[in-house]
Image (cartoon, rainbow, N blue to C red; front, side):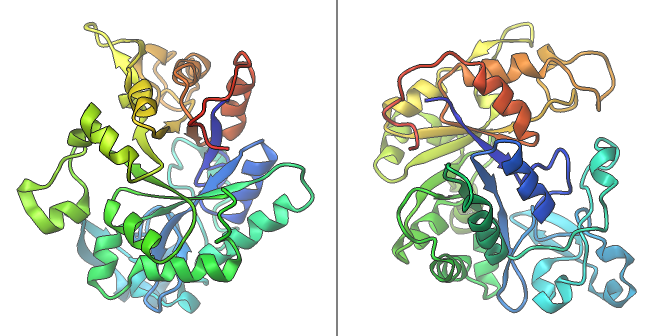
Length: 345
């Protein structure tokens, strides 16, 4: 089966991420699913933002009434300065407007700054239901639960809040429309224990270790790399539905530093009974592997078709893309084949 195209934070290459405009455009451009990142407010409302620190994706800095909320925090071991969702009520956050996170790179998207409000998770559920209703295809949500251990430490259990939202929205049906992903396996298990149906996907970085394990074990924490051995993948295959990895783990780098093909990770994951996804497909030179860049301007599109095709030719089950139409274009050019028995329905 050709890979799913998952719109990364919506059509975030064209509109400010995690806005209604970004999600609606994503489906209009052919995406199979959208990916909301989930964080919480002070009063326990789940909102969709890439991070709980929102200075780069909203106009919060231009609101004098919130100037005193600017602060320093350590989130999952990373020191940050800015404004954080957990220091605002939903009534306060709804007064903010979204901004393009990469304005120097994506001027077109930045031209929409200030037009769209922040969304709650419940708004995304309703939006997808409304968009899907007149269509003859099923649309999905790949919900990423962010910084679960941190939020639990301040009295905001994301698993509990998420389960309540899914049930209230009528999305806990087991029909395959919902996928839950996280860089922390603990919260995936907690969500399952709360009776939430949906594929569970473990996000793996190319380096480092999961924040939930670092919080418990410090330097003795299992690293992301430890999960990529054949034995570890086999064990994950008995506990989860899939893994999702950065594209650097899919593309194989030769001795000269150029991409000369793909790694065997997709085959290894499938052999372990896991679906496998990768992130993030983007056409700009800044994000392409060196072999696929054209010219020197970071904002220019390089040979994105070749990179996207190299990744999709591995048999990967799904790709996250900022410009979903470009990923759909490459996918539709793939030769038709029999569905992989482990590919999502």
